Image (cartoon, rainbow, N blue to C red; front, side, top):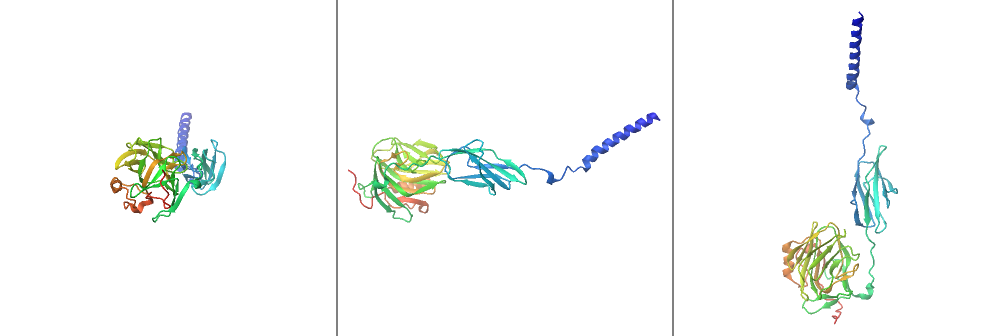
Length: 349
């Protein structure tokens, strides 16, 4: 009997352990969904990490599944200054930031008592716009609206009309002459700029068009190097062939997607890649770096589309006739025949 009792105890113990184990598997649901905590997702979108040349008003953009968000931003890494709290949208705009300053930022997402932080990003603001050192009004020789449907007025500083051809052109003395188109055209997508250029001498840089703050420009060296700079500060360039002094050449610069091409007298040249905004405000002079064209310009036309090779050939073959182009006419945002000044300022000796 003693031996049998021991065997019975062992069997009973094994049965009890098995029931406990399997019973737990069968009947324990692991708790309800309401008791589980799920981590929030939060990711920064814009500006890109390390982005430079940003405006002093910047929209911070992120994605996430929080109910509300707190935004932290300052010049320290990590940032400790909360600039906004309980933001319900996935963006927040910062205004009046300092120029040439690197800022760090991140976002905290909150939902149902759970808080999650994003990673930290940085961006750097642009340089302050410096006003031209010259007295613009003292050098203004004429101001008149263009004779077309575009609501803009160009101002002419120091330039004179050339009358050696039937159609005329405008002369720039290489010292302080330029044309202000009367507004600022900014392009973040496709555009084209064309004109006829004639250099009087070889010097470092002949400016074609630029923005007054110096962040965007197209300039040419007389030996044939064309330089293109966009708002990112990147500078693309290529040899587009030498310019013959005293002879007009047709130039068209085209941005299609992020590809920059130049066409000189109808011949195509690859210039480089652009991912930034390009602005046009002046013709013939970069007021920021004071790069000035020494020579003449005729027939400046700006389009908000990328002209095709055949359309550019059509403009080139059309020549300098001082009439508004019919090619892509609906996409022209600025046209200036550059043929004479309304006050008929005498040509400089």
